[in-house]
Image (cartoon, rainbow over all chains, first blue to last red):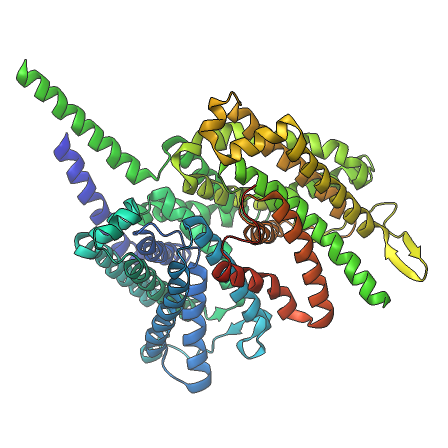
Amino acid sequence: MEKQWLRLDRVLPIALFIALAILPCFVSSYWIHTMLYMLWIMYLCTSWNISSLPGLFSILPSLFLGCGAYVSTIMWLFWGISPWIGLLAGAATGAIVALIVGWLSFRYKLPMITFAVFTLIICFVAEFIMLSVPIMGSTEGIALMYSGTNPAYFQFESKLPFYYIIFAFNIGALFLVKYILNSKMGIYFRAIHDNERVAGAAGVNVNRYKIIALVISGALTAVGGVFWAQYYRFISPHMLSPHFGIVLILLTVIGGSRTLWGPVLGSVILIPLGEVLKTEFGEYFPGLNLIIYGVVIIAVLLTLRTGILPYLSERQQKRKAALAATSHFSGKG
Amino acid sequence: MELWSQALLIGLARGGIYALLASGLTLAYAVTKQLHLTHGNFVCVALYLCIVLAGSLALDPYISVLITAPVLFGIGILIYRYILCRVMDSGILVSFQIFLGLIFVIENLLLGLFTATPRLIPSFIVLHRVTLGHLVLGLPHLIAFIAALVIGLGFYWMLRSTDFGRAIRAVSEDMETASLMGIRVRRVQMMVWALAFVLIAVSASLVAPWWEVSPFIGLDLTLFALIILVIGGMGNFVGALVAGFAMGLIESIAGLTIGGTMAAALPYIIFIFFLFFRPQGLFRGV
């Protein structure tokens, strides 16, 4: 019983990623786009998940996304710098923004919910600012120029190279999360999440590790923004609207935040479903996919109180404990 | 002069609405310690109810409050009993995430039913003007301001001098002790939660003739109410009233003097200032 679960736990994700690696060679362009979108969302969810490791609830993903997209695009359009370098610059900008926001809010010890509201409001302000700056396209957004396939400038005619790039990003992000979870830092994160005061008393520099989590998450999300700007070839201030960030958070929470596979599970189940609904019913009922996401998270949280994966592992642990207790009892008897 | 007096009145009217919304939110927070993130979305729901009533029964928005208020009262009780009550013990984050999901459900249901076109609800008094000497004032704004002021003062009286008000204050100060003193905590929480929804219905009717409604203004409204909540002091009723009126005035005066994006961003900037220099807000306690 126990071994079977262990195997399922390892085999399923690997099978999923092998399938994701092979499938695009056989399916239509529409499905490649859908799967690419799913992988992109999955990557962003994983990035947000890192910030949730020490128990932060930041609604910043859309801000980081905008940082990456705007920085790389502006560097390219004004100075002709390759988006590959823009990718690094975007990541650095995301990290710096995260550093500032984190430093400000943790220095003043904002309570968790106040921090969430604060980040929500920062996104609103950033959207306001971007909507009114004419150099950056203001309300109309910026369409990126395109001049045929050019790997040095992150431009490809077909969707496949983009697909495999985001695929690689995903693998990298997941390995990073796994590494963090197993490292000393992961233990600090868990300690901070469980009880901040006790962690501080035990000698963990709470603010520093919270900021580190936010900075890693910010840099990774910004990279996702650069990718999307290059793939979609259009950016607008509406990327910064907190709604999109909230979708990412909901998907992660459904799967289970603070777990390695939670964000993957949430986006693998819900994004294809949402995309199909969008193409089928988008004309009569726009936003049906968002309704489904909302209903699913309400149902999951009302019945399980946490995401799917944390619930399963909790149940597993309980069963193990019960098993141990009975064997102990019978051993004595 | 006339421009200024009109801007002041509009500011006071907006401020009154903010005060009503924020005071509902603050009372709900004080007794349940949960943040109601769909507060603004239910303003949209109430406004669209007014639209439906105006379309089908030709009801004036000021009269349709007689229908929307009981409906929202019911919704409030349902949400308390079937959502909030079940997750209240699991910490604030669970209910926060549930309400985040509910935002999407409400917004997109409204989008599907009523499309994204902004709408106004006609009222027979919308074009009337009041003249005081040589000042000309819009009647809907005047009504909103006076109604908000009266309701706010009425709630204040209720909190101070009725048994129910004392029960609310007791629950918000210490739930456990309050229940030991024989107060039925769950019932008080449910009633306050439903009352906050009634306030939503009332403010929706008050703004119906002069605010354009679209399915997506909900989150903005919630944020405004939250800003006022933080500035007034989390859970402080008088603070929410004062901060609400002040915020409306600041907004309309800034619109007149600075104008443009800066004025629109000013409330958020004030909020950030407060967060870092006076995070406990203007007032403390209930």
